[in-house]
Amino acid sequence: MRLTQQTNYSVRILLYCAANPDRPSRVADIASSFDMSETHLFKILKVLVDGHFIRTIRGRNGGIMLAKPAEDIRIGAVVRAAEENFILADCFDEAGHNCPLTLSCEYNRILREALAAFFSVLDRYTIADVAKDRPDLRFLLGIEDAASAAPAGTA
Image (tube, rainbow, N blue to C red; front, side, top):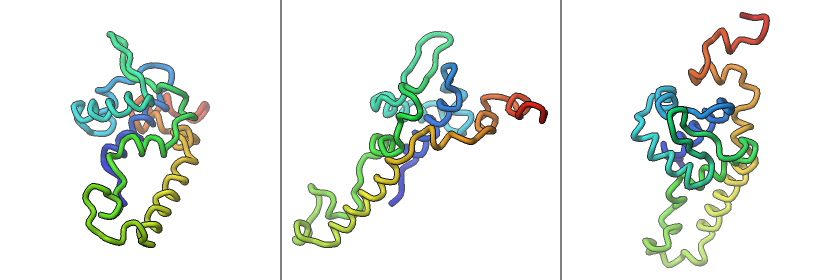
């Protein structure tokens, strides 16, 4: 199974906002940090806004912020919102399958169990878990310079 680029960038955008909790994050800054076009980022933002993961703030000092605490945003929920489907094999696609064994197939049951296990792991972690213990995260994302990111007494 391979997650789409949309899912990968969805998590990255949320991680950026979690690293910058005190003010709105600008779309241009996020796009620059991840070397992606603003147009592509806006498409992903729609998914994140619709999923109630981020909120937009209009105006001169506007941007985007997490819609709820990073501790309340489960990675599994983000993946479910960002991915279009979870068809692991043709038999998962009820509209397009042509296998006569679908309703009683052990392979199908095993794949469903594997998908459930995949989400069980993702549901244990939050955006805060991904962001924690990363003192250099703000620097790596270009939110602050190296001097500001250095722990006190080390600059």
